[in-house]
Image (cartoon, rainbow, N blue to C red; front, side):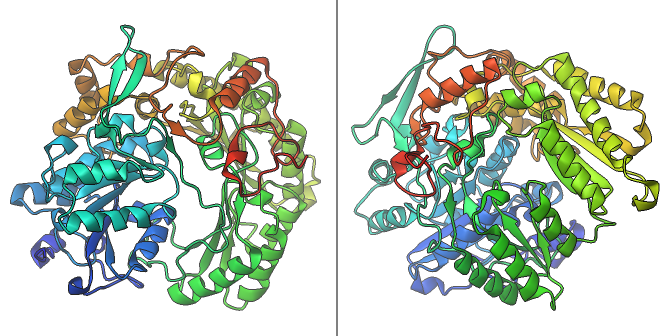
Length: 622
């Protein structure tokens, strides 16, 4: 089945970084095609270096390939240089492992990580010579399935996908693959397979529904076109993380990639409840891996990859209950081998600084804080759970420990933001710098260097801010300029830098984040005009997007700057994430009043995640 498509030496020599396309990496799986029933190709719709750093694909690649009847391979978005050659020479897109055309596979699974990769999804389908619209696919075409965080509002992509998997892939995929074998045996047509798949927990089949809108453009109702189409789709969660599948032999790329290290996922979920954060809501409740299992995985992965760095992955590492034991074990165990330990998502406290001083070169490394808001008022609105006192104390401890470089992350354009909140970003940076200069000169490590970065707030589904209005691109830029000007007024201006995100991509991200099915033609037309790699500033073409928006009569403000009413039905309301809409609405109201909600550990706020009956849910324990 399939025919080899290895690129000729002539093509490989003419493109940038040919190692992106040749496969054969360390720990790559090879199987005899005569021994398998299902061929699944896993796709990350971005360049190889980004896709190879994605943990979710590594986990599913390992899980699928443990099945004797299934062979899982990989494909990434060809960079524009190869894209052009493949179009000109009619070369179909191929998988890295076998070099077989994607169109010969049973499944094409696409990770939906970021809205600005949506045109790249169409690039994958187009180069694979698979019909872009699901309604045009034939019996023998691959089943195109989407997974990942953007499936929590899959509607802008509904016309391109046969299926979406809502939640964590470890739960229902085996059931789906077993069902597919019936189709393969000839007992189910493509349509019958899709209808049967709709009854599998977490599987959403968009073609089985029709959406009706009010005259004002808001959603009226979702109508099931089949009695097999459920009214709600429940997200799938791994409740027992310790024994969940995890790769001990992750793939090791031959070239430098974004995350060139072993990734140890210590837990999923977060107790913090930041109101802008989608991950904090959709991955509730918290689920931890046991420290003994993590010690074993760390050893195995480092032995099997040759990597010289290990990163602890979670939304809030400081909240992992066995963090001290794990980190001190890693330091002692791998000190001889000079393994670097990377600790993202830590709160700056005495323990964290002690650990960092053991694993980092203090003179070279910088400490990262994410206050998100410049004033206490703003941090209360977003429920950040961080006071200025805590920030300044943490910075001072770091300065006394020898650090002099600090990175600060903020978000501009959040709900109810006022000028003083915007200017507060510069003032907070100044206060941190002032803390440094209270240390006697003889004890300082040179000058302080503070780099503040601001992203622009994009309201996301399943957050308390899903009702919020988003700023216009002009408002975003005005706020960024205000911070920058205020920074330049500060006493320590030579030591302070301010960077900000591109406002045009933020606005487009906002359109798709809360978009509906009527946007699919916009994505299609933008791709046809030449839009790909929109998340890469050098390839983003806002003029082409503006053309497509105007031609499609899309009112950008309808999706972005319009505050939603409490009664509005959202395109994603058919998904049940456990956390209730009532809880999110209550949090939205509390944000308006600047009221904070305790983290889960300090007191249960009744979000609804207890319905899953597992994980570290504190409901009823306070």
